[in-house]
Image (cartoon, rainbow, N blue to C red; front, side):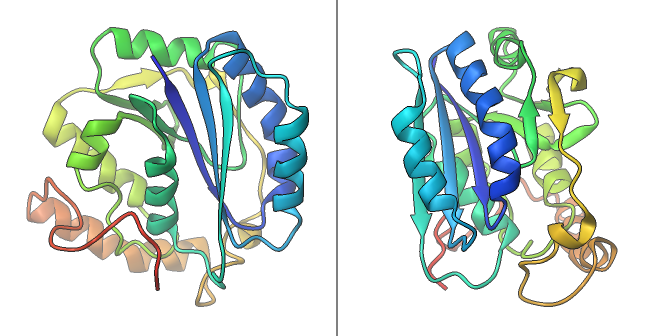
Length: 230
């Protein structure tokens, strides 16, 4: 079963330099795995790094690195970037993993065990932004609500929706994922408007509360989602 690890990134080359060797090791330890990187117009040399990495990476048969770059984006859009990166993946299961997440030995094996137990979705304990989901179910659920432009509870929103649609979730032990420390100002550096994690989260929270109140089971209804044309 092909699993796709999907990462959207904008100007986070230093994090990926630390994370990619561990991801390659995990892809080789439990193939087949796709390592999908969506480059949102990075200006820090990410394209050159990925071109070189694809050339030199020693991946076992069945595993691969998939790199896609979208040009002309001045600002980061949380939900659009997440949706586009997930839809890059061609695996039966998709795994959202941020640039600063470093899988530890046994991570992919634990994902497979959770899938074999019958879970359509799940997340890493205490790192709820890292979700895995059956590709078909991700699409049927409408993906991430694309009103979440800024940092906020977009992860809680999609988790709530997947839980309502599918019931209980698989939980991956958090010792199987290392999180590289990233200063808050770096995390909010590429947004369209100035703000902090707290101010953005407070602004975006209304969408999450609205979806829960209205028992929304499918996001982005009536709109074309998973593209970034504006």
